[in-house]
Length: 193
Picture 1 (cartoon, rainbow, N blue to C red):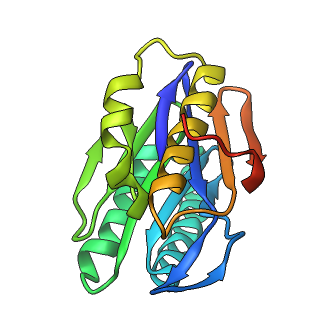
Picture 2 (cartoon, helix red, strand yellow):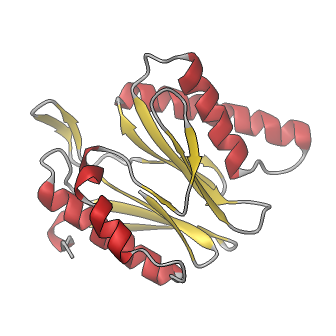
């Protein structure tokens, strides 16, 4: 999930990877770095999301060299959308978020099929079905970065308690004008609510 707050964005995800009823990893990092201040939350097929994010990282690096400036979050989302749209068999839901030259945080969802939606907050993955109501009721436009971190931690806590495919720990990234700060919440410190 990702939320816009305090002039930047906070991304967060659980760490469980599942394969049917089998859990191959409880420590996966689902927050992928696309550039210095742009990250991607991934859900769906791990192989597909890895391939997409690797291609976007390479394209963003090339673009930065050619244009001489850091790419925008919108540009990264459009690149990811093009890959998903042109390869519709891919099973990937991406949330591309970060801080760029626009001077604010931006969040874009790239859904199956390649639809891109810009929003104040975005959810993805199997646990998202359990927390839409929670996020609707608790998200505020005036949240500080600290409020955003607490909101994301609480929402993911709710998801991990209610969804069998979510769990493990929580990884978060706060991205703003000052750069990126990463946070980790161990599984035994996750609280729903």
